[in-house]
Length: 464
Image 1: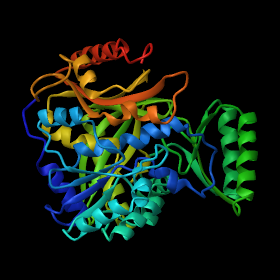
Image 2 (image 1 turned 180 degrees about the vertical axis):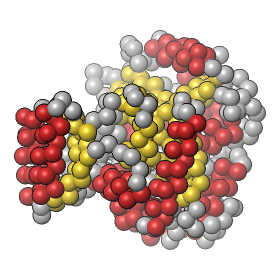
Image 3 (image 1 turned 90 degrees about the horizontal axis):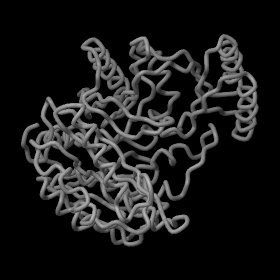
């Protein structure tokens, strides 16, 4: 682990890729639920989103504090906890300037809040006059509207391009086109393709091969269904066909063989405005029921698998550039129990959790560091101030880069659901943080200590 200040070439290279200039100021917007806008009006699988969960995800906007530089601005739903800002300053983070919306609604994204705030729109317009560009987590019609209202140009492609390349159907077709290995499967864009896919998948089920149905615009475990018998497949066939008849015959599903997975992976690259592809990092993704929970770094891959990942990133990035996309790209991948690497499961052509960790990873942690980025679930009986949390975690929080410990990279999600209405006088929260040390054993020990202290916090109920 080695000392550094949290500024430098990471931001300069991102600015160049996004705007063509290394010193262009950016306005960051952490609209993490952008996929919901891309999915609207699209046929697919039914999904349920709990209001309290959405309130927490919408406060992930605070992750942008660790990505932006001192000459940038970050738009947030609410002002950060002052003690949390002091903590980040103590870590050496050169903090951006913060703009907050006047009337944040927990169920709205920060973009939706911003569009409804004329004073904020006017402030963004003044930044446009200083040469700033708007960099959202991902671009939908809402972010395009905000950019239009403020006269603040986007440092990102148009919403139509972003939506197109984030479809899982696009990912499968791209993999076929550039020759990347992937699970056997079929795209279903209409009822005829659906019928053919069901017939083929039925044969797989007969030989004991499970299948998975994926909504083209599903995210984080929503819109994924594993099927192990023909009866369930027939039920879903009927349901999807019925939905298709209500949407002009369109279907938005892919059907694939379920692979015997060993590790989930996520790798990130950046495609610049000229079409050049820059590989950033590959990590092991920690998931539970298809829902992202965090990352382990470095990924435990062989040299050959590392080369395969880099080659896939180059091919995917070049193809995205051809379709007009530039910016950050995250690709989900996996290894199987027989050590085969499948370098493309789906493409997330937007910022990813890795994006918000990248500045910290490159400038705080050394090449020999083992790191675990994760979320700690909480059940709170009252709001938890950051000062109380900092005191609770005293001794396990890292206070300098050469010391093992925990670094907190989002605090707003801890108390976000408290305004969304909890049940029985309590509410759920999440603490986003990174544990780093010189070995896996140290990381596990620190992680367990953090979990134990959070469990014993006076503001929490039971096991987090």
